[in-house]
Amino acid sequence: MKTVFSGIQPSGSVHLGNILGALVNWRRMQEKYKCYYCIVDLHSLTTFPDKDLLEKDKIDTIKSLIAVGIDPNESIIYFQSNLHHHAELSWILSNFCQIGELQRMTQYKDKSESFGTHAGLFTYPVLMAADILIHKADEVPVGDDQTQHLELTRDIAMRFNQKYEDIFPIPARNSTKTGARVMSLRHPESKMSKSSDDVAGTIYITDDDKEIIKKIKTSVTDSESKISFNKEEKPGLSNLIEILASITGKSIKETVKEVSGMQYGDFKMYVAENLITFMSPIRDKYLSLTDKKILEISDEGRDKATITADKTLLEVKNCLGI
Ligand code: AQP
Image (tube, rainbow, N blue to C red; front, top):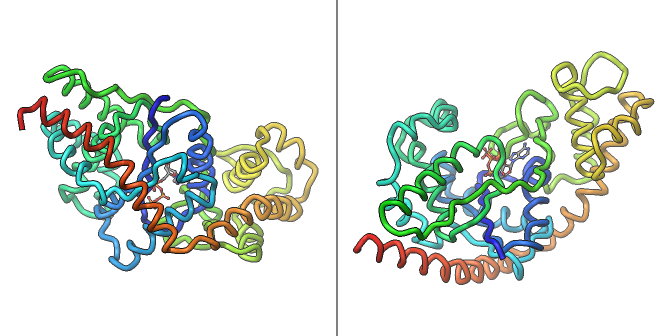
């Protein structure tokens, strides 16, 4: 069985974008792969989170994974900071990475505008390489925004293998169909995001039916009245069509055909109803989980993840003579 690794930052409440763009796929992958799903709290330190909020977000992120159907008996779910192996391997791997490579990372350029040019943000891709390589992952499901980081991970692994021993598999991008990129309901030119303060434009996992209806009803569309899919000219409407297609499992073409005769108001109500059907069991499951249960799950995940991480780190250290 091949190994998959993926991470999610505990940087705020999980939203529809995370669910459709990543978590639904994570759930599917556990049928075919040995999966490690890591709450990457060390990564979130690069944006200086509030201590109490971070503690809460960490727990709530695991609740979200389980609510979407990720099964802790099948997949290994754990907090990154519970395994010293990530940071230790990251230091070792930093010797296999050039400063120029890190300078070319577009995420560094984007994020440093908001959070400054500190070394944590700069070396973040090396920690990501360690996350993936510590479990010898064969495949990594990543969005377009992360392909540059995965390329760097592959280069680092190849350099290590060439200089020492061939111990790391070269991780491939998981090619399973990724979900839609969900855009903000209020600013459809930007993606829906955990850490933004765009509450009205974001469907959170905890939103109740009334909130879902309100957010969809007040979502930005355009001044025309005919429904069609065109991301450039009708970004708001196209976002709603993509959301509807993702949650019903239909293609964009089928979805457009189905709703083409509707008025915008009726269409929005139809999207909201479908979204409530999709989200309410996820929300109910999420609300039923206690913090105590989550800590038990993360302790079990930590113990299971430690087994492979110990093995890899020992192998690496033996190669290096340390
Ligand atoms: N709007 C989105 N549409 C589709 N997929 C999305 N993802 C995030 N936003 C959308 C996917 O969710 C996974 C976990 O994300 P992450 O926490 O590692 O980081 P992110 O991409 O930075 O997510 P956020 O929600 O936007 O968080 P912040 O606000 O902290 O930056 C990833 O697979 C991501 O592609």
